[in-house]
Amino acid sequence: MLGLDRITFDPSIMGGQACIRGMQIPVSLLVNLVANGKPVEEILEEYPDLIDELFYNFL
Image (cartoon, rainbow, N blue to C red; front, side, top):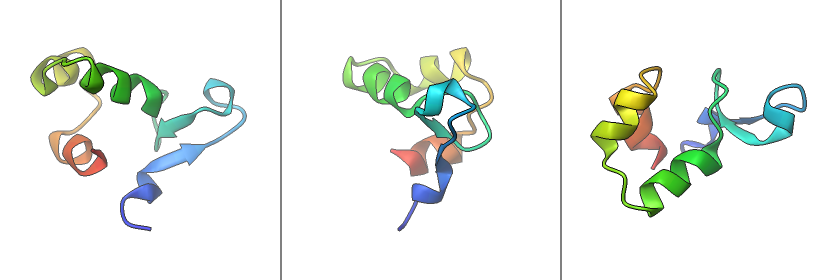
């Protein structure tokens, strides 16, 4: 599936929550931030490990 290779599930990372590949950033956190109107620029400032392209392709 397109884009889903960036989402991983690993029982040893974040209790098996869906996370961005290679990071301990839960997908649910990002979805919640976006759903509550947090600007993408602020999210990227708080989570600098997210690359603009990765984040935009994820959403």
